[in-house]
Image 1 (cartoon, rainbow, N blue to C red):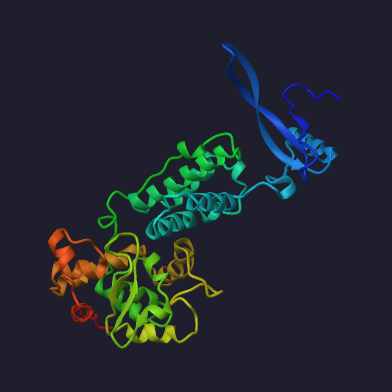
Image 2 (image 1 turned 45 degrees about the vertical axis):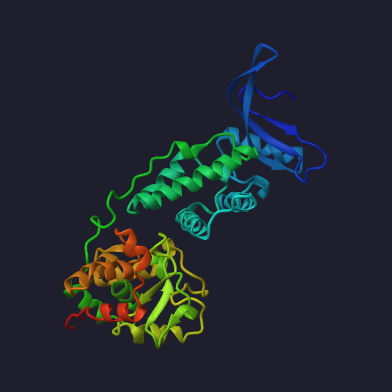
Length: 357
């Protein structure tokens, strides 16, 4: 039976496939040059794959009638997460392997796409990505840049292996916060005092305020890397100066940290299954819940700005503030040859005064 023009079609792809029947539609005409001659041929988009021809015809009929259809008929089309995993395995298999820092940044960027992880990659469109980037436009230029970079790599890989026909990563609108520091306001003394009243539930906010750690850094602090006697922990990411640095622990938050170290989990802060939080998971659950209870309109990065402000008010020298926050020193000689002992940084961070509460 011949199907109507513009209806689409069903094709047999070969006996060695588990689902050999495919439903497809025409999406345009392409020009092809061969042997010095110009030819025109139809371009198709495959909608799904099926074990039986009758199932493919039924799906195509439902599609043309406008009935709701699964975006992954047969269940064999890769999701966003599947394509990321495949691309990452491919990329790590090349001779020039990505650094640990780059892998970590890719992982953070991938987690910003959490709302798309279980979606069929082939059917994602510009609108899906625009909504995701709009949700994260509070991030810095570099963070948004990593998100775009990961997406570009995934589409390059997907087109190379014929998983998709079009690169939607080049069409997205991605906004970012121009200056990460200027876009954030520090917590006031009154606000910090209010958080102390809820220290049992909001201990992690205080840890961020008195260490200057980014949310993503706190979420990856392992208990084994916390040294209570010497009052420091090892963590950090994002920059060369900030990765795996020694972070001094202010005396006021030491009991809060110890109490959560004794819970027997790998990470200092974790989700209900004991796993490290993604930034999105951290922001949407413990952070947002805490800010709603307090009635504050603060972002996680505000704690880092607060720490820098408190250190400056306490008279802590700039090079020590940078060492604590993981900022690179402007003076190259100082950056290379000055190694500030952690005991000195502990003394410096303890100069911060705790507001009355």
